[in-house]
Image (tube, rainbow, N blue to C red; front, top):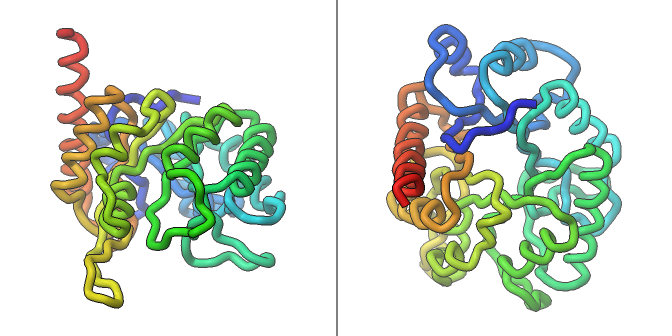
Length: 283
């Protein structure tokens, strides 16, 4: 199990395997979605095993449905453990969301109300996952498009309470912060300032798509299909200034670019991390 360095990483895409394996680019680490590697063999496993020989790896789940109002899918949890046992990732993460109902997997990561009932359910599920995997996981803040009237705490308060109860870590998705803050008209910088950075084990950066709601208001979609925008970079610098350098992933899962474009985004994040590390040493 190689630790994930406080550098920029990128998602491993089969489209880039030649550039990665032939040239060994200067990238801190790679991340994969666990669900893409739950089958026993095939080309994805072949190339990922080769990448794993040279780079640390993080595993990011998208289908565990931590927030579901029902028992976790133990078969899915078993498959996740199989991926972790096989590749020994430095970090394992999941979303504060639900994505299953009555045995059906949905095509989105859906939000949940931030109240005591949801809190207990999520904490019970995280305890179960961490016990089953034999390791601490990171929980990611979601991008959201609706509010629940039944919520009686903020998202940051909810996440902090989960950490206090379960001992899990947090994955701060800065793009999700900007998307949600824009959609719900709150201050993204204030959210970053209140986030419990001491529990953050990884940061995500990505691109969003622009749309409009039914009354013509600005609506952002967490799309992962473009470059990181300047407002998100600014929030990222604010987060790093507060919490110090953290492993940082460039998420670009759709409209996948040529390798140089993806690598350039990682290099920009690395420069921000290096500046902060230099400032820390000087201080």
